[in-house]
Amino acid sequence: MQNRNFVSKDLKIKSWESIESYFNDLDKRDINSINDLEKWMHDRSELDSVLEEDLAWRYIKMNCDTTDKSLTDDFNFFVTEIEPNISKYSNILDKKFIESKLINELDEKKYFIPIRTIKRKLELFREKNIPIFAMLQKEEQEYGAIAANMTIKFDGKEITLQKAANYLKNSDRDFREKVYFLINNRRLTEVDNFNNILTKLIAKRDKIARNADFKNYRDYKFVELNRFDYTIDDCIEFHKSIKSNVCPIVNKINKNRKESLQLDVLKPWDLDVDINSKPALKPFKNTEELIEKSIKCFTKVRPKYGEYLSKMNELGFLDLDARKGKAPGGFNYPLYESNIPFIFTNATGNLRDVETICHEGGHAIHSIVSSTLELVDFKELPSEVAELASMSMELISMEHWDVFFENKEELIRAKQNQLEGIISILPWVAIVDKFQHWLYLNPNHSVEERKQNWIEIAKEFGSNVVDYTGCEDFYANTWQKQLHIFEVPFYYIEYAMAQLGAIAVWRNYKQNPEKTLDNYEKALKLGYSVTIPEIYETAGIKFDFSNEYVNELMNFVNEELAELYK
Image 1 (tube, rainbow, N blue to C red):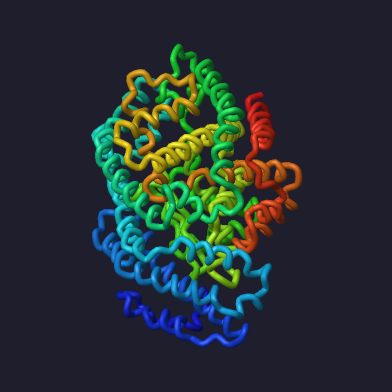
Image 2: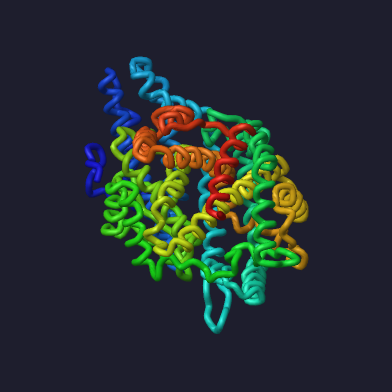
């Protein structure tokens, strides 16, 4: 737990007035020396860590139980009553910092990243956007609240869609088809709701961009996300690289699936079943066993990684089971004052849960090893770096999945699934990212235009082996499954960038495990104190998503997959 030297240890944040004095102190304080300036920076960072952790717990609790209105009210109170005031004062403090004559005496290399980021924030700040941001944060949660309570009735039981998805692994094809239609017909009942939510969000986001003197929200968001190390055009080229180098492999995988299952037509309910019609993998019986095996797996990677997960479990910082009323998805939430993160997932007993805990566990390791960094600014990670940590751990940990699968044949199946999943996710990321480019370049589009554009993009990157005849309505609305589109716009292409980096880390790990882990950890300890390319270089890889590099890494994964099928 981080010690408080500036903020009262007894502080309870129940109103803006309860914290206003700290901002006034920082605003009015005289800064006459470099020591004064660095003390001011550390006090501000301490205040930020307290406030961000308070908001974090409100968000975590709300997601753990979306049925408790008081938890949602607590979160909404913070984002509507407190955050707007924080935003105003933050702009004042940013100006005070940047305009200080002493800023030139700071260590330029050490503070390059936060200074660059603060200057960018000042460029984008518009006071008239503050109430729009507050309303956005509230409305963005509407999607999760609806999705969390989506269930189907099956065999006389009411089950969540996450649990229902497990039945798509059943070897009985008629059974799978029935479940597929139950799930997707339930999704169709919310199509209008989700479209209405997104339409409202797009309008507000477009207004924010125009208030900040941008032509559209896409261009604004690229700047707001601090994408200093690549451009919009780079992302568009990345889409093309995925289409050229990855989509053909996905088609090859699906052709193999079709032949192995001896099907005339491969349907969407055939995509999750084992290609030899074997029962679905069951890596654990319950959440307790998932935690126990995950700790063992992480311990085999490095003993201290297992200790980290064990400590989180002891503190109650793991909420992994799926239940009605719990928000969908999964996340690792860093807690800057506790210096121990919180992992939230919806485990239902399948292989995907293993992948998820290893992914979020990678984030957790990142949070813990970078927790000693001086300032919150160094701990607030760009997604390209954060996802490198998590996706690399997915692949590194895979080398120790014998903890979950004692049977060698099942272990091979698990690895096959993991690698095919990595290949298949890249086109999906490209689809979602390109779709969002269109959404915000055409903010006044109709719902019908939105649907048609999604279909067009999905077909461009989708597999031509899978037949969606009879499922056209489901296909046209599959974007509604993607939480990022609603809650964190444009935060998705980073997954593809980081996935390439993770493949490169894994390739190094297979050649020299200890050296790779040393480099991995050195990179994680940097937090965001240097540029993204420098962090990747420290990890022993390249920050590169050119056509040549995508081709090189896809060939490597394809070769590894071929070895597993021998």
